[in-house]
Image (cartoon, rainbow, N blue to C red):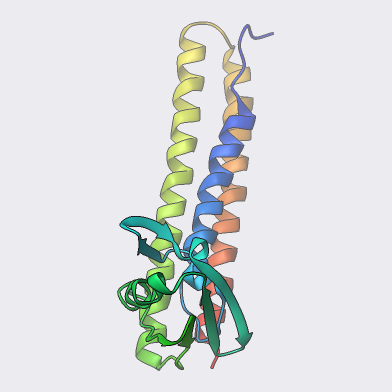
Length: 187
């Protein structure tokens, strides 16, 4: 048996990390429906410090086409509005005292097509990350065989296992993309 084995748990963890990152990026894509996750990437300049919006106020979704942020300190209301407006999400917030209301406009066909392209780019980045993890695993296996730590048969079996894990994660990326595209294209 081999003196050393390939760390399959590490390979799976790294591939799952790429998938998790993809889902986080997808949550930031606006689909015409309000979601508190839409503001996860918004960073507010609070007291001169870049701060996630969830740390300056309470983000909630009171109705399907509206997000509200209850700002805790009046000094941060303007900065929060500016951060939301400049986040590239196509949102136009309006404040009412400490409450910032963010109406979610309907998406037109052109914007939907743009968003599906962006989702596709995110998915391709995740696929590339997964393939890079696969490549690292395969190179490690070659090196282990070259150093006579594993036999040719063990190399083949381990390579097949790495490929199977890769195919599974790529399939999950494709399924997530199909689901997100369907969500974006719903009228």
